[in-house]
Length: 303
Image 1 (tube, helix red, strand yellow):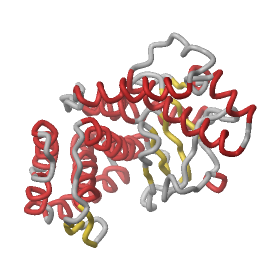
Image 2 (cartoon, one colour):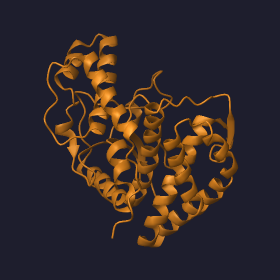
Image 3 (cartoon, one colour):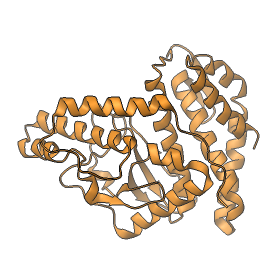
Image 4 (cartoon, one colour):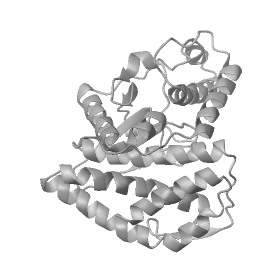
């Protein structure tokens, strides 16, 4: 039996997705209409940002053919790249990390869908599909459907290695992450990064401006961080804790030990944020969003 779904549907985010997509398309004035497909507002929103970023880069570089490609492919060729999953079609890629661009738009490497994009090999697409299924079965279908549309699988590692993952604000709905041969672990990391994407959208949709003058100690970074980063950590890590606690009884052997150690470590770190989190939440001006963040943090503390 699937675990209870966590409610990630948030009306301001849906409105934000539609409005932002409409604005991007008005600027780009694509030469072709978006193909009919069972996509959602969240998918359109994610793909529109890839098209915007790619078209802008092509225009700045004087790459006329590439710029024209984006005009002819307002969905960034998603229909040809998509992999069926439990949360809908996803774009699963395996770009070469050493060839990913770096620029002023992001502190980390990133990848933009374009004319040379190809889908990941079948084994990695199967891994991702299994991860989405695991996440959905454990209550995170809405989060993954709305905020992990494009996943770039980076370095293959072994269970127990340090796994790096990240998102960038200019490409919402996109996740970059290392991976091991365990869908359960990949699901955990997709949930973590989708959580960051969700919170970015929620803050933008509710027009919450968080002061960067107030800092809080982050046990994950072992340093004081502005409220924005602290609140992000106090949302994304609790999501992975809730997921891990739910999936743990279904695992065994080394995977079970790995996840149990992860959950135990996160319990200790999160416990130290209890007082500061209440103070940081006071900076969130939208009551509904504030309560959602409080609820996730409280549930994780109870594990």
